[in-house]
Length: 240
Length: 344
Image: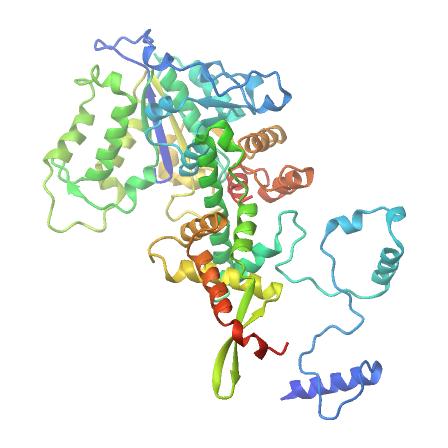
């Protein structure tokens, strides 16, 4: 009860202090943040702070001075300054998570990476000298490549026109592609595999198959492309 | 309470008349001593490896270095007893390498100077979680096997006490219960490691035969008694008899661990805390050997070994930054380092 009131007061205060946009009647800012407009984003990368003064360019110098004067927002709790942190892996972990159980999701992902590494290393040590060059043992490279292979190029949107819903092909944004690839991988492992096998085993098998451009997730991507090709006629229904 | 004890009892080889001598024929062990995996130490990067594969010759200069055991020998000497993660590592790398560390060298020194006429000395290996107690024990077992001792290696006494599927009333003593499953697996493994001794010791140790007799002849009861305390289990009873040092001609080496123990807090690692009053009094007097986290040199050696075997695959793991971060995250704890480098 008090919250929307407080929100409106804050919005009013902001508009009085720094009118960024012309006042529109009946429009209040709904999504708000505790941080005022002067707060800067945090920088987690340690390399940025290690550069000596001489090497900084003009805009970096102004940035440094700005940081000295302005307050800085707090970092999110899943962001680390670790050299091993990977935003794609974090995104994947968050998508795997159920009910806020990040510990379980993270352990599944680490076990998956370990499983991929073990399988590849076993193959590596049993292969001959010539074959060893072609075997990729880095689980992170395999993960990224597999995701890239699973990303569709073109997507389908449902558009209603004249009472009927048409499947209209349209190019996808990068975020949407990444999301679809991860979603398909996870759904494939959860639903279409035997329920008594461990998730990390299923995932490692799927990722290795996707890395080699085979498997059910790649098939699903091709199905999506075929649908888009089949519905080419409706492409002009897109207005964006 | 011997709840938190895993033990191995090594006996010097004996002939029927009770006389002891070191068996001269080591033919079954001397095969495959030359290490084709070891590269001679010309290149500076192989400082973490040594080609000395006989634990008897390990000395101060080998501290921190890995020595490899041929896989054939591993199958015979360690049918059970190696930690699960180490077995997985062996399967992945296609070789088994143990690091030579100070506590192990200390223990080997004591074992080398055992006087077989005196009663068996008890050694207790203790330390915090994941510091390498089981691996020290395995190092000692390998040494004893190479020296042709009779090795009774019980990998985990907790497995005998917890989660028992079948219980049979012992025909030897009506108040005790046998566990045929655990006993038979252990006996099979004992046979694998000490094959050549079994022909010699048939008539000597009667209590071993009692166990075998009871597992064959025991008739399963209709209702299995749920609430059975460890004192009533034959295996535990005989284990306790072996640990009492009223016999001579060998040594008793035990490892304490909190990992499988019941009703003990996670932070407990000292012998007095883990054994309780009864256990401590049974094992007292003993020589304690403490195992701690990796030193700088050992950490460096382990890190180089993982890099060499391509276990650390992350591109940042081979940089100085990555190494410092690994050191910080694992706190030089061997178990923690292994778990972290598994997914990197």
